[in-house]
Amino acid sequence: CAHCSKQPNLASIRFGVQEEFFAGSGVVVFCANLDVEDGAEGANGYLVNTLRASMALYEVHVELGCMDVVGSVFGGFIPASLRSLLLADMVTRQQIISCSYGFPA
Image (cartoon, rainbow, N blue to C red; front, side, top):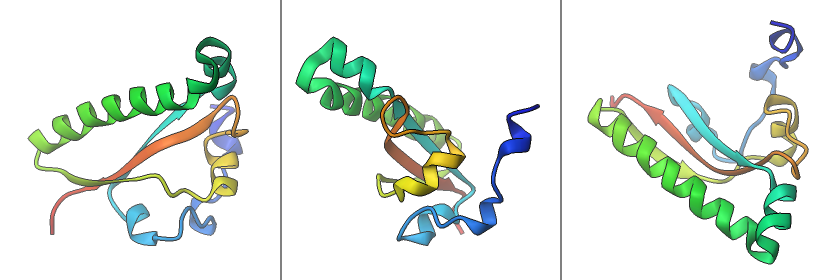
């Protein structure tokens, strides 16, 4: 698709300080539109988004655990690396919480 051709070379991007989180089989990222939530929820918009994202991540964690996949929750993406990968402007698309998954060794 047209969007895929715009994706950066992932090998050249440093996503976070702890590289082991990004060496897993997969990374699940939950994003939110802070602009909309701040309008709907006021000052609690980020808190509401964090709560919703953590509930959704819990469901993913349980489902993948049933398939013998293990993971670790983290939130430490380097924001500049997400701008191109997730097309995030950090307002209308802000990374809230993430998890790295893989099969145990």
